[in-house]
Length: 511
Image (cartoon, rainbow, N blue to C red; front, side):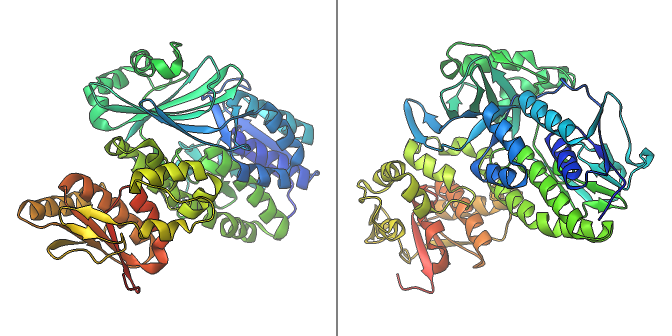
């Protein structure tokens, strides 16, 4: 599809990258980026770019990626609970300062011939263009004014973004218990003297610490100084006594954006304007830049905008929806994170890596045998030789001794006298699940030895009931058996090591 003029609303990573790729693909087309802010005015701290995203950017535009990697800061990942730390190596994970990311993308957009217009708010309907690319963020005015079938779901947990004036040694996941409740940081370095330091907590803790009041007092474009002062004391050890830095830093709840349509007329949504995925597994920058690649590919392959828009969605929607589902599971896991703090740190790392069903236990064992061996030792009191052992079979073959009985294998039908819990919920920590847990608690109090958790045989349903089983195990004190098809053995093994259940009953297999 040949175009005379393209307007891009939003000068963030997705908008700038789409503009450059469009101009490279169609040099005769006039491409303008309209950004309401100033070129050097941004908020936020660092942005993470994983290996998979880097591969896609390299295929689309190696020159830009080269400069982004050159500006990036490599790091591993650690999980610290109390005095115990476990490390996961990742030699291609980098953090990049958001200011530097935008500077690189602005420079490369202008080099390609894109016109950048700053300091003026534009609306799609006032622009003379064959195509308007709306990359105007999670609060997109274009999306709200248009016919895109948008839905926004708000999370239960609260979080804020801040930073530090030094580089952490690695990415850090670290919970800290306080008199008010648990706070957890997700932090990572992005330059030799800066780190992103994100903190999240549950609503009960947030209120007990007085942050409902400080949030109400903080204007939308200001920083909640009282919260930063409190949190820098909470995380003083990880901060090495240094202060936290704010930049429009205030508590907020994550908003998951979904749209039935990404196109309306000549306007196409891109990035956070079209969809968001929780920061614990998704990256708005990653999704937006990959959207840009998909959009330009679709425009080059089709003869008219309608066909190109359909191709763009066909290319991108499956990947986006898959990531949104992974992120939804990850978000629910993090919002319930404090209930897992008594797990040994290696088992907690396995729980973290397998929380969304995206990293199979055997794959994690192959890449990080030392971490998984430590987790298996915590699970069974011993560990096999890794690699070389079928870790799933090994986990299922371990014995279990409980007051309800001795079981030679974890793959077992379980004892008589179990309360049956049939799971048909999407949110294991939602109100419907609360009712299931209350009924199970009452059954155990009345003499049931525990619960048998059943439900549909599809994998998403199995993952959900594994999460509910974790709640039942923690909140009822009874034995918990999860029933699931044999095809989900790897997921179930990860659940056993992560203390989500005690036994599994494999349907379609003798156990």
